[in-house]
Every structure is written in C-alpha cells, then in structure tokens.
Image (cartoon, rainbow, N blue to C red; front, side, top):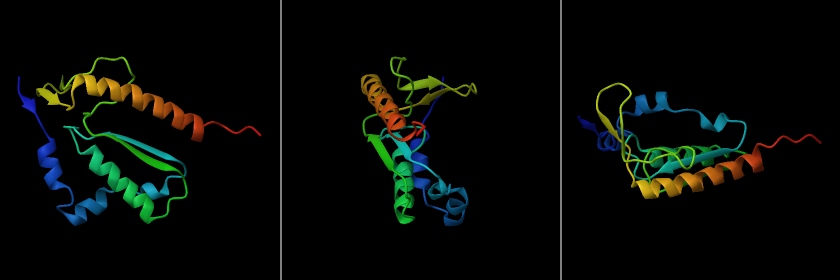
Amino acid sequence: MREFQYLGEKRTCIGRKEKNKQRAEIAVENINGPILLISGGDDQLWPADILSEKVITRLKEHSHPYYYKHINYPEVGHSFVVPGLPTSQSVISPYGTGRLLLGGLPKDNAQAQFDAWQRTVDFFREFLTPNYD
C-alpha cells in the first residue's frame, strides 16, 4: 500500500500565486460571531496551523468585533474527533489510493482530543448559549 504525504508540497506552495490565493481566501471577517480554531502543528494533510494563523491575522486586520482564538497543539496531527476514539498516525484513504499520513503520535493525539473537546465545550457554553432574558 502506498503512503501519501501532502504536507511538504503544500507548505512550500502557500502564497506562491497571489491571484489564486486571493480567490481562495474566505472572508472570515464577515462571520457574525465568535470563532474557535483548533490545529495540530504536525498535521500531515494540510498546514492547519499556518492557515489558522492566517485567519487570526485577517481577523485582527479587520478589527473583528467578536471573540476569536486559535489553539495549536504543536506535536499533534490532523484529526480532532470525539475523545476516546482510536488515534493513529495514518488512515486508509476512502478513495482507495493508499494510506494517508495524519501526523502526531497516538498518545499526543489522544491527549489533545480530550483537551480540545473540553475547550470546545467551554467555548460553546460561553459564547453559544442562548440568552432567553
């Protein structure tokens, strides 16, 4: 089975073609509410840490009026799912093309899943709880 690793190529391509970059950017500054970004610094599918920081920079540049935060786990890979599920450094591609490298060590990924889950729940409680007053 072949292993695919996309990260090296994508990290060097970021910002290479300005016109394509501008067309691909999402106007996150138009989001009418708080934003929580969670990334792994060892994500092997795409540079989530770098792209999340670009979102934060864009929000700052546009004086985004709502709360926003980027939580990065430097040693963690791609997948943040419900805590307690199995973690691995790679998965079989659903497209039958081989194994996709996710990054991070299973122990680090598992610990980050628990922490990220709790921080997400806290974020929801603080910012997304309805006010019925």
